[in-house]
Image (cartoon, rainbow, N blue to C red; front, side):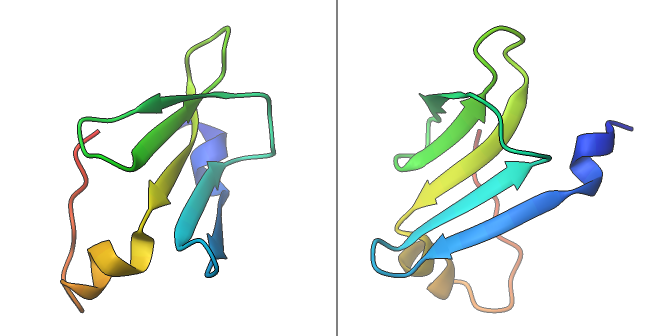
Length: 74
């Protein structure tokens, strides 16, 4: 198992309603939009390895499904 997945950091920006999830320590990244609007995978520009996920309108998306597992297409 990739060791970076043992360290996932979550940072929520309530003013902009954005959730940032980072896998391991901060690294340079590019953002790639997923099929789901407002969901971005952050990838290392050389290895193309996922280093995080950004979810825009986080509370709106997840308040519609309290207590449920929510899938986000990547």
